[in-house]
Amino acid sequence: MSTDDKTVKRRRSALRGRQLETALLSELRDLIGDERIDSSLRHRDRLIEHLHALQDNYGYLSMPRLRALAAFMNLPMAAIYETATFYAHFDVTHDEQVPPAEITLRVCDSLSCQLAGAEALHQDLVDGADPARVRVLRAPCMGRCDTAPVVAVGHHHVCHANAFNVGDAVEHGQVRPEEIRWPSLADYRSAGGYGLLADCREGRVSVESLAQELEQAGLRGLGGAGFPTYRKWQAVRAEPGPRYAVINADEGEPGTFKDRYYLEREPHVFLEGALVSAWAVEAKALYIYLRDEYPGLLRVLKEAIAELEAAGFIEPGFVILRRGAGAYICGEESALIESLEGKPGKPRHRPPFVAQKGLFGQPTLVNNVETVYWIPRIHAQGAEWFASQGRHGRKGLRSFSVSGRVAQPGVHLAPAGITLNELIEEFCGGMAEGHRLLAYLPGGASGGILPASKADIPLDFDTLQEHGCFIGSAAVIVLSDQDDLAAAASNLLGFFADESCGQCTPCRVGTEKMLTLLERKTWDEETLQQLAGVMADASICGLGQAAPNPVLSLLRDFRSELASHNLIAKG
Image (cartoon, rainbow, N blue to C red; front, side):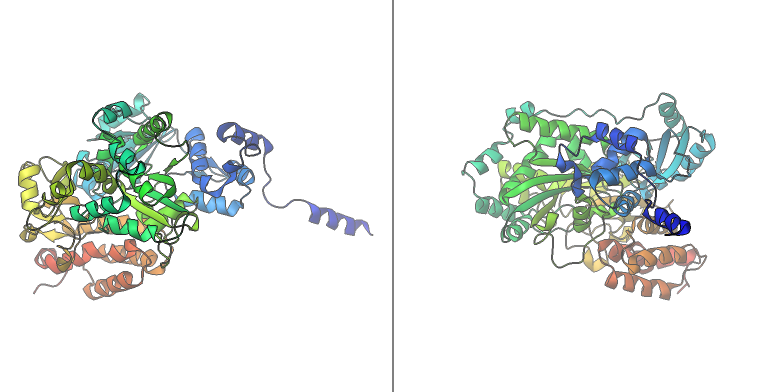
C-alpha cells in the first residue's frame, strides 16, 4: 500500500462532525443525574425536562451541551436540536454566537396588553436597556391579561408594567417567580377535601353513578371544545388498557387566565378532580402539563403533589408534572401529547383520536384544569345545584376571563348564558371610564369578534356559532370606540402566524399571507375570503382553521367601520 493510500485510509477512519466534550457530559450528570445508574433519564419523554434544566442553570443552550445531551440520552443530535429549537423558551446558541444577555425581558404583545400600551412600553424598554446586560423580546400572552401590560423579568412577572417598575425589578435582580400562598393539604382536608376520592376508591361511589351525576350537571370540557365530560370517560374506558390521564394546564389562548386563577387559589380541589378522573379511567399514571409562563405554579403543584405522596394518597411517581416551553400549539391535545413524549408539539392527524391512541400509543383521557376542578364541587353540592345556575335557558356556571376596556377585569364566575351586557354591568363594574362598547371577543383570539349590537346574545356553548363565533375557553376581551379594529385583527393574525407549528401548508403559509393582506392600505376582500376558506378546510388542527375568524368577523359585522377607514369599498 502506498503512502498516499495510507493517508486516505487514516482520514476516512477519523470521526466526522463536531466531537463530544467529555467534561460537559460529566457536568450534565452532575446536573441531571447519572443515566448509567438510572436508565429512565434516557427516556425520550424526559428530553424537554432536561432542556429546561440546562436552560435554567446556564441561561441558554449551547451546541456543545446539546451534543453532550444527545450522547447522554443516546438520541440523534438532529432530534435534540429539532425539539430545542421548536420551543420559544429555549435559547439555542450556535458555536459562533454570543450567549444571550444575563436578563431577558419578555414584553407581552397580546391584544389585551396592546390595548394597555404594550407597544410604547416595548420601545421604552428597548431604548433604556443596556444590551450587554438586558435583552428585550416580544412575547405572546402570559395569562395575566387582567393586569395588562405585563413584562416577564426572567421568571418574575411585573403586572401593570411601566418602564419604572420593570427597571426597578431589573436593578434589584428580581427574576424569580412571585410567591403564591395557597391552602395546604391539611386545610383542604379539614373542609372535607378528598372525601370524593376516598369514596370512589372504597366503592361508595361508582364510575357509572358519578358519570351520571356529571351528565345531569351538564359539565363539559371548559378548555374550549365543550365535549361532555362523562362521554370522554366512556370513550377512554371503552379502549383496552393500560390507559393514561393527562391534564392540559397550557392555557395559551390570548385573554385566558382562569386556570391560573383556580390553581393559585385551590390547587388541591383541582388535584382531587384530576385524581378522580384518573381513577374513572383506571389510569396507569396522571400527567399534568403546565405552561411555562406559570413558573410560580410549578412550585405550588410540586409541593401539593409531595403532600399527597407523603400522606399516602398517591404512590410516588403516579402524578407526573411536566413543563411546557412556550408553544401555544401545545394547547391542542394531540400536540400536547407529542410534547409530553419529548418531541416538537405538532398536532397529529386524526383518526385515531387520543382517546384511542394517545400518550405512548395508549388510550388517554385529556381534560383541562377547570373541567376537573368542578368535579368534587359538583359532587359535594349536587348536580342540580350546578345545572340550575344558568341564565337564558342555559345550564351551569362559567368562569369568564375578562380583560380590555372594563372597569374591573379579572376572572368572574357567572351563570352560563349570561350576555356580555349583563356580564359587564353585573360583574365588571361597567365599561372603563370614558370608553363606549364597540366590540368584543367572546372566546379569545380564535373565537371571532362581535359588535356591540350583539352584546345581548347568551354566552355559552352552541349559542354563538350562527354568528360565526364560539365561546371556547370564555376569554372575553372588550374593545371600545377608542380602539382600532383593523389593528386588533392584525395583532391576532400576527399571533397565529408566530404560533403556527409549520407542519401544514394552509396554516403555515395562510397565516403569513393573511397578515400581509391585512397590512395593505386596502384589503383584498375576495382573496381574504378565499384564503380563509382554504385554511378552514385544509388545516390539520384548530389553529389554522380558526385563525381567519377575527378577519371574517370584521368583514361580516363591521363593514361600515372598515369602509370609513377605506379598507373596503363603501356600499
